[in-house]
Length: 72
Image (cartoon, rainbow, N blue to C red):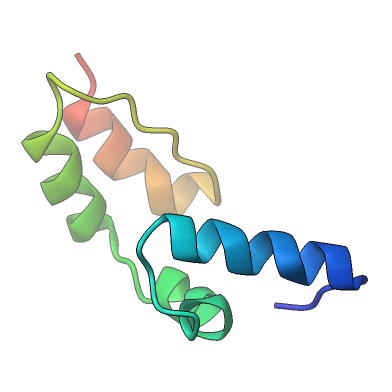
């Protein structure tokens, strides 16, 4: 991730720590996000279908199938 100002970096650090995530998450997030597969989305959506609202963004071919299989 790239930050265009110290303020953006500070906000990312604060958000990361408030979320109980390690500081290294700021740099590992893009790779971790890229490693998520449709099956992962299906599993998580099925587990929290009645208690959460999930927002999926991205390539329709990637997020479309899990979204369709868990929609109600």
